[in-house]
Structures are given as C-alpha cells and as structure tokens.
Length: 595
Image (cartoon, rainbow, N blue to C red; front, side, top):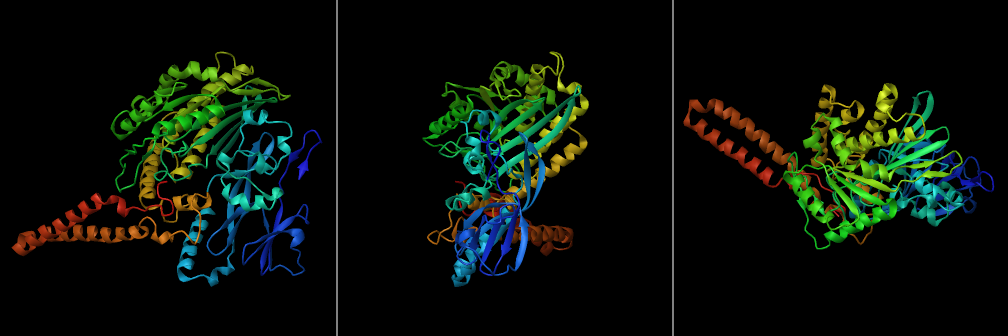
C-alpha cells in the first residue's frame, strides 16, 4: 500500500500478518487489510490470491508472523519461508529497521509420499539444508523503505521511485532472498514481498559538544558470489568476488546527513584455498587465459557504480600471500584508471600498532580526501558528493580489512564534523572519549557480525578496533576464534549442520537448481568422504596408544621391542596417509563444489 501525500508517496509493506493453517493449505493475510493475502496448497505448493481462495472451514491453527521471505521448490514440493520473530534495531533515514530473529520453512510437500526412495532421500537432505537456512544470521529489512540502496544513490533516483514496490527499488546485488522471491513476484504479491539484506546494522547516539548526533553503520553483503570462507575465494569469470561488502557510515546531525561508502572484496583473481587439515592451507592461483578480463570486468563495474577506485591490498609480501599479492599487482598494472596500493598490514602494524596505519594514510590521504563524502542539507539539497571509493582487501577481507576501514572512517568522520562546524580544525573524535568509544564499538560489532556470516567466528583483531590496542583478553579470544575457524573450515563448512555452510547457500541463492534431471547430491563430489575421518582418527589414536604401551614394555623382551616398532610404523603410516590425502578427510560442499 502507499502512504503519504500525492507528491511524496512511499510504498509500505504489510507488517502485521496472520498465518492460518488448514488441512489442505496455508493462508497468509494482512491484519490491517483482512481481504488482502494469499494461500498456498500443502500438496502441490500452488499459490492463489485470497479472493480466489476463500474458505468457510475453520483453521486448525492461527499464528502471527512478520513477513514472507519467499518460496523454494524442491523435488517433491514447495517450501514457504516466513519470519516468525523480529527485533527493531534502529532506523535508516527515519524508517524503522528490523533484524530477523527467527524464520521457518512451511512444508507444502504432501506429494512426497508418491516419490521413490532415492527422491525421498534427496528431499530429506535438501530439507536439512533448509533447516540451517532458518538460522541464517544478520538479516535485516524495513517495511517502509529499501535499505539496500546507499544515500547518495537514493538521492539521485528519479521522482516517484519511492512509490514503487520495495522489491523493485532494491539493488539486486544485496537482496539475500532474491531467488526465493521469484514466485511471489510472479503472482504480484507486492505488499508481501520483503527484500532481506544480509550484513550488519549498527547505530549509536553521540553527544558531540552537546550536538546530538546519530551515527549508523550499514554493511550490505553481495549475493553474486555468496559463500563461506574457504569455499568461496577470489572471483568468478564474470568478475564477481567473494565476500564483497558495501559499508555505509551515515552521520545525521541537525537535519544534515553525511554518507561515506567503502567496499571490500576478495582479491579479484581466480584462486582457491582448499582445506586439507593443515592450519593454513596453501593458496593456489588458477592460471586462466581470461584472468585479465576478469580483473577488468570487476573494476569496470566498480567504476560504473562508485567512480574512481583505490585498490588497497593489505596482504603479506612473502609466502603464499606474497605470490597472490604479486599476481594481483601485475594485473593491476594493466588497468590505467585504478590506483593500486600495496600495504603489508602485518609487517607495518604487527598485532598491536594500530596507529601505524598513519603510514598508509599518508600515502592515500590526498586521493581519499579528494574522493570526499556525500552530504545533503535539511531540504535535501546536495552539498557534497563522493567521487570515488576505497576498495580494501586482505585474504579473508575480515580482520585486517575491518581495522583499516574503521581507521579511514574515523578520518572521514573528523572531516565531516569539521565541515558542519561541530569540530574546529584541530579537534577530532578521539578527544571525546565516551563518543569515541561508541564509534569504535560500532565498527567492532560490525566486524564480528560480518565475520560470523563468512567465517563462523567473531573477527580477529577486534581489540584494535574497540580499544585501539591488543589486550590479553583479546589475544585469548582471537586464539579461540582461530581454532574455531580451523575446525569449521575443515569439518563444518561443507555438509555438517553449520548455519552458513556452502550447500545451503547454493540452494537458496539459486546457484544450484533442484531437478529430477540432476544427479542425486549423494552422487556429487565424493559425498561420503567424511566417513573416512573417524576410521583414520581411530587408527591414529589406537596406534599412538599401543606404541606408547609397547615402548614401556620394550625392555622386557625382543617381542615387545618388535611390537613397538610395528605400531610406531603403523602410526607413522596413518599420519603420512592423512597428511597426503588431507583434502579427502575434510568436509566439502556437494552441490556446486568450488564454482
């Protein structure tokens, strides 16, 4: 429905919904407009508008829901995804923003009983993936506005754009459930279609020199190369990169609004890092004849969207990272309109010298300040425009990247507050301890949330962002997160119950299409390889135990000595076998592999 004056109409979604469960169908309708809604058959999954699906039968159950996130068709039926709880987390440009607290897939698959045994097995596997999708973290939305568009882009849209259905306003790059919405769009259920954004939304109220100020941090994760840390690296042939995120820092003060955009994304080459039980798997650059075109496509897209780009590479200059960085640098020399800056974060900053980022800032400050930021006044007049973008990357585009982006955001914030007359030319936000603490917390919380979505753990180096230095508690937390990442990468990201694992993402994003013509997922990518790990572990533990026992007895007889040698040899052999075939013992994605 539309609200507002004729000259300023905006589209609003229904925010109070009722789910009615009947024996043969589910019905979703608006409490605000009871005649508006739709039904979906529990047998075939067919959708009908409410006017075509009236029923005098009494529902077996009635419950409140807070939105419909889409549908997905599997082998034997359709599954409807609904939002079952939400939390208001702040506002974006005056419109309330909510985080999804829980979701549920409603099964419309009664035809499953007519399927053969293999189809039932496959459907059961797909349903386990849907269960993990229900726990997807970091999903945000608004009933009254689109939150996928940054302020600068919104202000340049044609008149009347805000009166369009919210899904039509949205930037498709950042709509997490884009694939799931297709059927609802087909049936023109515009008031029920909620574009979900995955990323982070943080908000803080500052009191800078008695000037009430709102600072909002909104990160938008791109869905074009969606995936988990070890299974989505680098770029695809279209130039889309893994873990690509647009982060907008929004400052609102006395009617003025300032926006700073930064982006991050995996190094836009073709490369991989396959887990193999080692703590830090080897990086492998894939030599491909179209690599130059991949890099060119990526940066051409950035130029079209954001203007001139500074590519900030924070990787190490030795080892595997150094080889990848050198290959990236070589390709960047071929692009005339992009400035490439190499900065070895670990070498210059170590684990605690956050202020050493000033060395980097000295290199890029002139171009960074020339790019500027976006600023509008109380009447919506554009006073400043951001004319370019900083693109940062490390290997994961998490920890080092987040520290660096927060530093640049702080520098821009000082410039903005000086421009608005809150600060003098010599003042900066670190002089105001309480407000500076809130600002750093915004960036630290954002880093944790983005890291949870991509790597399954909190961000490392969070102390550098939160406190400006490394603490003992932070070192312990980083150590625990590093161990957790190792476990999740090797044994959880593929087929195990982990809320961001790769198969579930490939399924709901439409990268993998369920069809009876496709091979069973149990026939793809060595599905049962994980079962070898318990056998190898048992042999390893047993061999070490028996070796230890027989060594203790070795002095008593020659037989014990031979046994010791034998079991030591068996243990060494198993260890060598596991090391040589580490990839076979790790959990792997099944549906799309490393595409």
